[in-house]
Image (cartoon, rainbow, N blue to C red; front, top):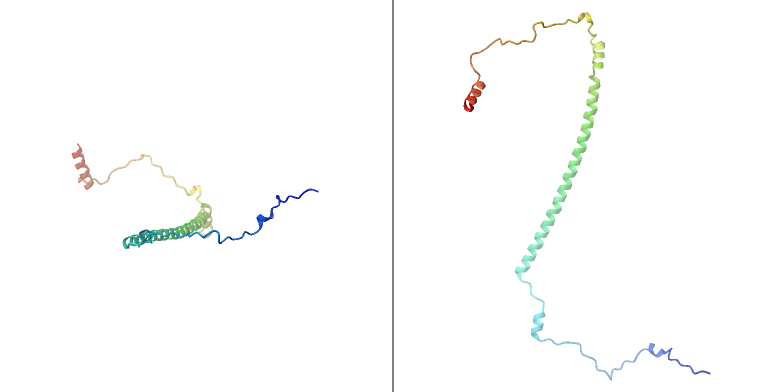
Length: 165
């Protein structure tokens, strides 16, 4: 028979390792810094002027944001008000159109003639009732009263003519 070689299946690699404490000393990972380095790397103190300027900048930013939000709220309210007013205007224009059409229907020539015949007892004029007037002399106009005095506007006009002429 053949000899079995277990090198392909070396299970010793999966066994827990033993800690060797006596052979290897532990390393000290703590680094000692000189006092100058410690003071240099310490947290810096806040300067009062830097603190005040930072607070002032934060206040300016908050006020700016607040005014932007307030402006947007005002804009939204005004837009809503404009939309409501435009809606009321549209309704009023529609009502006006309806009333105008109703008024036109009531005041039409046919409606007026019917009202005159039924309620007032009137009737249309006949040919015998019509009298024609003619003007044989033509269109003429005459001034009946003439005053010798010039009006105030005529005096101003003559003054401007004298300036320009």
